[in-house]
Amino acid sequence: MTHRFQAVKGTRDILPPESALWNRVEQTARRVFATYNFQEIRLPLFEETELFARSVGADTDIVSKEMYSFEDRDARSLSLRPEATASVVRAYIQHGLHTRPGLTKLYYIGPMFRRERPQKGRYRQFYQVGAEVLGSSDHPALDAEIIEMLLVFLDRCGLREYTLYVNSIGCSDCRPKYIERLRGELQKVKDQLGADSRRRIETNPLRVLDSKLPEEQPIIEKLPSILDHLCDACRDHFQKFQQELKDRSLAYEINKRLVRGLDYYIRTTFEVTAPGLGAQNAICGGGRYDGLAELLGGPPTKGMGFALGTDRLLLALRQVEESGGKDQLDVFMVWLGASALRAARMLARRLREQGISTELLYEETKLKKALGLADKSSARYAVLIGEDELAQNKFTLRDMRSGQQRAMSESALLRELAASAGASAAEE
Ligand code: HAM
Image (cartoon, rainbow, N blue to C red; front, side, top):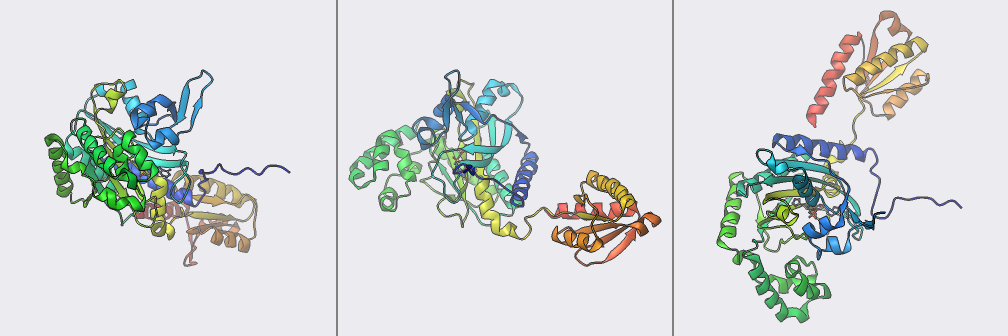
């Protein structure tokens, strides 16, 4: 028996009509980000493994357990990218982008790969829309402005319910002292913790705060908070950042346990969650990563950004979008007779040139059957061309919702359809 191939576990095909929603979300990102002066960067899908080990952190789950790594023919270890911030910073250094004037504002759209246990909202190939600002500014207004851009984007996509959580995880001055204090407290309650958290007391005590184990929650609630251990500069930054959010009327909640699963963050961290997604409810995460460029051998650089999980955003949007998800076909063209086909072909080409989507039958089909097909295609209009129309040098435009028909000249038809296609694009 021949093997029936299936998409590999944790990967999936995105078929129409769902693919239209993906395009719409990505198009919205491009539009909104451009208004904040961001430009697109297209990055490789794989990099040297060491790039991720150094930036995301060798002890993180992402690097130690979840990367798709392989040895290339020249024995170098490469990995499919589990995230893109490391690649953006690598590109920033490699191309000397710091020598360009002003801040570097970049966005990316594309697949990431992590070998996690697949479940609702969690895939092994998933998609992110991300944005990063690199340069010399660690002004808290920048942190707030990036979040504003993200929330404007979510709003434009039609997401109404979400929560923005923010935190500060300090800097290389204050965090090590806090971590020592945390480690000391964790040692005292070690026996009540699960195996993962016990191990993390040594490797990465901050990550214990991120534990989802129900039995650990009361213990974690009582642990000292990073917010009580920030140095003056970090406390000032966090306060100003919150004021900047308030000045922009952006609602937020502080989550003192928001430490994130990547090592490069300093000061600001944030996440956006949406209801209805079960355990994987974080649709977006980000924060500040001043110093990451130096860690990768680059010049002193501040950085701030986020990545949004497109798969999860679309799950959250599903109900909102269900009604109008499919890209609507504008015109279904019905022709009768060889000379009508010639006219139909020319008209179809002109309509498509104007951005009006058009379906044209390749074979002659009886009028009744052709109109039935037009109906099934959910086209907004049918254009009919037969002998009568050819004789009068006109086309019949049929509104598929009302069933009303009108004979029109080609130029009148183009005008009318262009106006109607323009109106539906403006509705989006
Ligand atoms: P992250 O929190 O690891 O951050 O991922 C960002 C988002 O990607 C998550 O909030 C989630 O929506 C989505 N995501 C992550 N893993 C999966 C998965 N297995 N399946 C589906 N969706 C997933 C980063 O990646 C950082 N690079 C964000 C950043 C940019 N920080 C600063 N700049």
